[in-house]
Image (cartoon, rainbow, N blue to C red; front, side):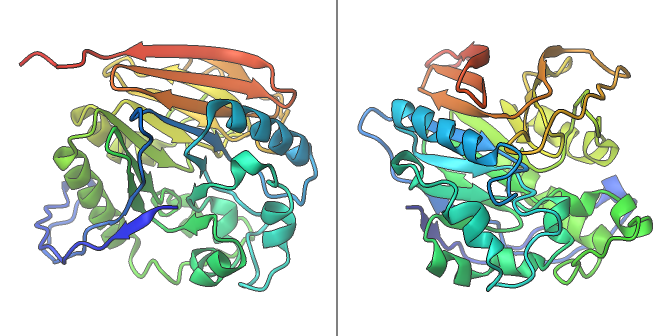
Length: 332
């Protein structure tokens, strides 16, 4: 399991040009979790999103195949890209949906590893604080869900970003839904602070591979399409700091898009249960390498010189495989 590395408070100077703000304040750095390394220094994990339906909509079948692939790859952990519990998150720390949609579904031996999770918009429609509570870790020690944090694996650094507060429509046009904004006193200040922390973390990172995880899409041809707030504010930071992968859910599909202006690869794994929407947007297909509208999940494997991304359907069939090679020592 991961070990929390508590860092001291650090002053952060922020000129929030991205939101039209100009102010200074002090903030704590993101929590960091140090993950133990394998002897061969390799890293492998699974990525699944938009899943928590008490096993329905093929969630159990996807979980079964995850267990098989997880054993084959000897995974180190699992990443959940959010919308962990449908339709409206958890009601409390005692909500039986936690065990019925998580503990009793992902039962394979290979999946008894650390799960790193972010909140999705459906999670914010319930009691968001319940998913963040350490009480859930007492029920199932695999569970770790925070708003934003860092998992460090020496070879790779994985930065988890709370993307839901970025989307203005959730605040201005909630479409009858109620969102749990108790942890977001000021949207503008929250986003500005988070962008500053993300930029600082990525600039200071010496990891061979830089990975960012959020719930919402940056680029997608699926149902929700691109998230304009993330393309405006988060994407430039990823591009400027040599991020290799942005992994997300939100669109209930499997998808791979290459950025046209940087090495960033956009990987959508939001097909953990209900899928097959059948509405593919044709507005911006630039860089599209792969799209699948059905259920499934993704694996990621890393060594010092190579990364391999694989998408699987709910039968374990390989749908798309992509490799990237890096020089062992980058030229100066």
